[in-house]
Length: 277
Image (cartoon, rainbow, N blue to C red; front, side, top):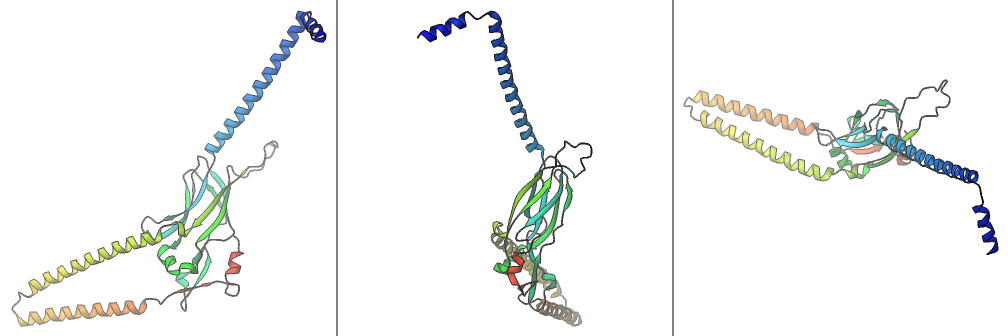
C-alpha cells in the first residue's frame, strides 16, 4: 500500500506542463487511430467500387433465336467497363462433329474453332459463334463429349508501356471460370415439345391439302365434256407421278446413320483429352 500512496502522491504533484504533454500525446494517438480507420475504410470503398465497375466476362451457351435447336457459344461483357485481351483456356476443348464432311458413314470430331484472343469487348458487347445442333448431338449421344470446363482471362485496361510512370504496376489479370455442359440444357424435353408441335403443324397442312383436293374435285366433277374430264385426269396423274418421283429422290438422298470418329484415329480419345487451346 505504501508504494501506491507514494505513486499517487507523485502524480498529484505533477505540474500543469506535464499534464498538457500527456494530453497532447493522447490526442496524437487518437488522431493516428482515426487516420488508420479512415484509410482502411477508403481502401475498402475503393475495392468495392472497383468490383462494381470492372468488366465481367461470361461465356455461356444459348439457343439461336430463329432455330431453337442450333446452340451458339456466346462471350459477353456484363460489366460497366471494357475488357481487353480476352483469352480462353480449356483442358478439354469444346468439340463438334464435322457433319458436312461426313464420309463413309463417319464424321470426324474436331475442336470447335475459337479465336486465339478477343482484343476488346465494350460493356454489353458480345462475340458469338454457332457451336452445334442439339438434334444432331442428341443422335450421336455418348459418342461425343458434353461437358467442357475452362477459364476466361482478361484485363480491365489495355496493355501499354509504363514509360515514365514507373510507379504504375502491371495491370491485374481477371478470370472467370467456365463450365459448358450440354446436359445442363433441356434438349430432350425441348425436342419432344417441338417435334409434337411440328407434327401438329404437319397434320394441319395435310388437312389443308385435303380440303384443296376436295374443292378441286367438287368443281371439276361439274364438267360434262369428256375431253375436259380426260385432261383433268391426266393432270392429276401427272401431279401424282411428279410427287412420287420427288419422294423417291428424297429417300435416296437421305444419308445413312452417321457414326463418329476422331480426327486422329491412331490415338483416339486419349490424344483429344491432352490437347489444349
